[in-house]
Image (cartoon, rainbow, N blue to C red; front, side):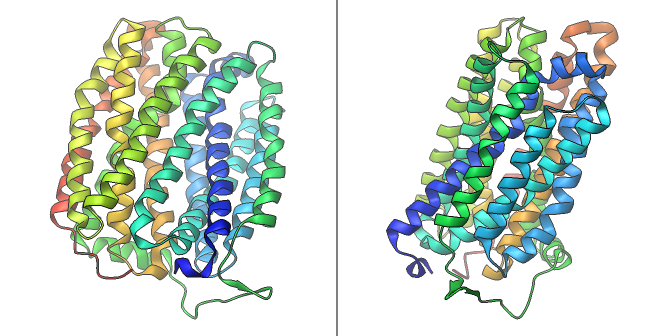
Length: 418
């Protein structure tokens, strides 16, 4: 399949989509750095913050992902990605204009709807234009780009906070994305396009078919459990990490952006690239290896997650955060590769959207929202440090996820289709 596109055009496409993946998480993560300012100005509680960072975003992310992914499985994927980037960039700018909870929720919903379609379309496009032996590395490279966006968004936001208020920062970071969306349309490859037309397969894969495939496959059932449990912890740490260091350890926004952003970069970028290399080298023809590799990383992450949440020393917490993010990151690229090995090629964009649904609803939705409400519950006893017990409680989900990953590997079928 890689023969449809020249190596130069393929690499240009990867570079553009790498920037898109970075941008999506910069725009998403910048909210977490300023959420305490937003909380104060809009008169919100931690539960409402959790709704803004969590459930409202995740629910509309999931609702928008599937119709867009169905089109991506049969239509022009570069158009999908371009339009999605333009929509979420405009919504990011609108976050800076919100004056109450409902206006901010509407902007966050727009951000979610825009970001929902780019990921599945990107995975579908890249796995078609790159050869099989480089597939997991490419997927992990995109995950590393997301990690750069998470960490870079914090660092950039922290630096901008020294000169601008939160409203201006949303405008500064949102508007340039419109130009990036146009560049994707102009310069990226789409092998389905020939003389201006898109070749559309006769049969479209529906969400119900993907869910039935998962329900009928033992390995994919374990993947479903993993994708429910692990994001609960992972996104609670990501979405509340900035507030955690500001409240518990007294860091400024600039310090939080620098240190937490650096910790995320060290853990996530290296973890994603290592996961891709190891999975391509040892798991290409043996998807079961991917499950074992992912599970061991998650089990090792658990004690470090507890120490991160409960330590009274900011630098110990940062060091533990690096380890947690590194070990947790080892699971996603291999698990996506394992999942793709269990389904036909025509189902992979929808499978990617389904994986994103699990991650979004469980992680951004439940993880982000639960962390807010559990923190609010502990506030009476712990005050500003209520995020410590809240994040410690949610860390226990890593144990379940680790076991689920190992079982997914043990029950995985051999790769039967390119």
